[in-house]
Amino acid sequence: MIGVFLLTILSLTWFTACYDSEGEYKVIKEDVMIKNEAGTYTKAQVIAPSDFKEKSHPLITLSHGFRGSMNTAGGDVLAENLAKAGFATIRMNYSHYKDKAKGKKINQYTVDTMISDQLLCIDYMIKNYNVDKEKIGLYGRSLGGRVAMIMANENRGGYDYKALALIAPAGNKNALQYYMGGEKTWQKMKAAAKENGSVYHQGVVLTPEFFKSIEDNNPCDTGKDFQNPVLVIYNTKDYVVLPETSLECAKTYEDVQITEVTSKKSPHGYEMSFEKSNLKDQLTAELIQFFQVNL
Image (cartoon, rainbow, N blue to C red; front, side, top):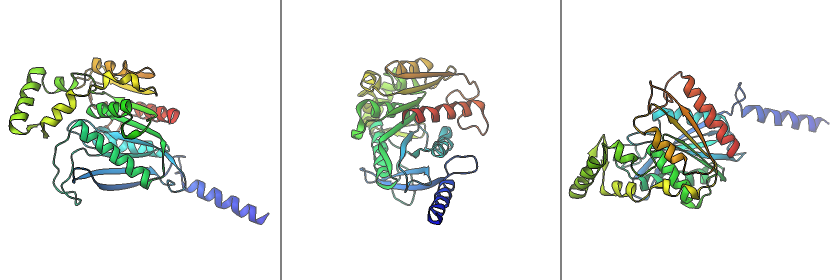
């Protein structure tokens, strides 16, 4: 009887140590620099439940938008909230670093290199964090939404992604052309990149490969191939990725849940980076519930 009693106490001690006073998972954070196939380094941050060595958790990767970083639009806070809810998360900067010391950024990427970074980080999590590779979800916003759509639609990396959450996905034929100033401006920039090797736009180096990666793969054409649940959130006031673009992306999927919001204060950020916001709280809760149900 004494042995059983002691075992029970030890079990309860381990159990409570995994959670904070509000019943959420305690989390660990790890900053990593992972060497990628280009020979440069991808900077990423892991936020995961602290009991990852003893227990396998679903994995969610977070994909940021054009000009952004892994922390823009509240990416850091969202990742932590997802981890507190029991998900292992990883997010990364798509602009690579020349060396592991986090020196100068290259400020250059394409949709293809963004996808490669996602897969690199998924492999890192499977190797180091005891995540369940049968329960991987994708979250992407803006251009990162396009990346997540392609990955889900085409089972990139050979994974059967179980859930796809998108905020303002720039995933149709002309989303990036619109963002860059229209078709004429797009073609002019594309021609300049071909002639000079690259063009510089809003702090990002755009190579001919960037334009090709957008034009060669329209994920709205392949949404029918993804049969698992999808959540699409759009803002009626978004002028960066138009509401009709988000809706076109949503309607390519069979099993889709659409959430419409309205925020004049944060048209494309959806208030996710605000310190206090009812909308941020609403969307965070919805994203957590979506992944809890589907992963």
